[in-house]
Length: 162
Image 1 (cartoon, one colour):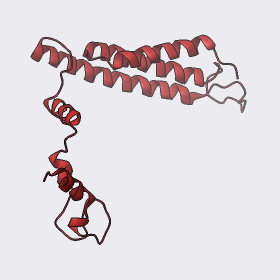
Image 2: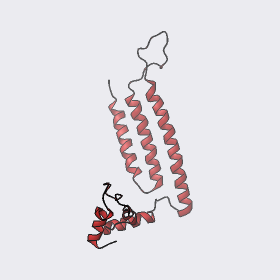
Image 3: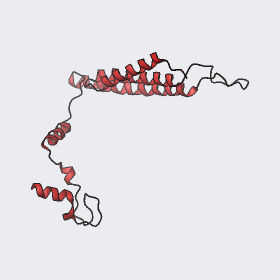
Image 4: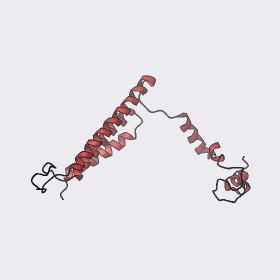
């Protein structure tokens, strides 16, 4: 089976540029990246589908030279998914523009807290909540151990934290 190298290179370029734009903080760039990835996926399906052939309708029992209809169906599905995702990101960008005057994604307050705690190597309250006062029910998952045998509790006791 022959593969059109030009289409493969265009698909790779679209996918690479789309992923690069998808990682930006501006929602308008994310939108363009999603459209580029959607087009790259559609091209990839068509390239993988093989060469063009006759319409996939069997006439008089002759099945030679018929094109595969599955890649065409997958391209239609990819177009619908890309359209829905584009509409969603466009609505988010518009709402962000209404609220903030720009479409840049802001850091969440919780993200900043997690980043600050990670830099201090601090243990969160949710991690400490994994220990239990019931025998055999500790964060190590080993049945039959007492809570004082819990490795998480022992680590906190060594550090002098509760």
